[in-house]
Image (cartoon, rainbow, N blue to C red; front, side, top):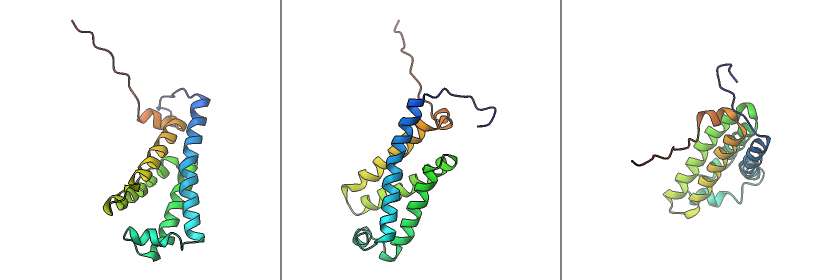
Length: 139
């Protein structure tokens, strides 16, 4: 952390909660990408239903795995979160375009990505502060 960045107190419990929450998207995205690489046959019908050519399954699976790995590593977690947000945004748009209600799943995974990162990284907590609104007294 740069010297001029204020140090925000971190509770071990908060950091561990962030790690646990972050593990969920990593496991989902990583295992999904690896499974699509190892055995792409079950994934192809879904891809074609969403309007993607079946030959793109391995390419998109590699992107998915790389994003999950970048997010899992503390040094590149912010970059990974940004890339996962883009990836999940594309997944959301694909589902919305064909009228599937499953668009909620990539949205939920994206929320988990940023919630986990927020809890485990003090720099992100500094950049996205939650502020308490002071109660206004009425005269």
